[in-house]
Length: 174
Image (cartoon, rainbow, N blue to C red; front, side, top):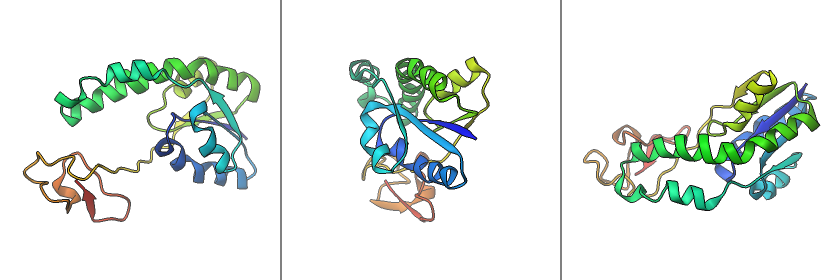
């Protein structure tokens, strides 16, 4: 099977996909990772085939995030998903993902949770698609100090309503 894996830029987007890509390769599948050019070093260091997509425009992302200091974490999350990932990043990546489909002819597309160009391209081309829905969640120490339930540097994960503990951990950095 030929599988196109799509991702946004950043080690936190690419690295969780690496074990899946390697497992597919070991199983005899052909895999191609399509991601913004900025993550080429991460993909190549992992020994995976790479197809470069356009890097999203930093100025548009920065403008979308300009109001973050005065927003709640939930409001920031909405902007990141709606305006940054599903709009700015998807617009930048979609032409490249379509080109990767034309060149690689995948049987299916797998994507990470915040990458939407792969989803759109799969729908346009009638390809099956799936999402590798894993998260590695960390916050900056002190990021949720405003919560009365989460005022210590290492509070129980359940104390932070918007923080998840790393897999297998009973605490989260708050």
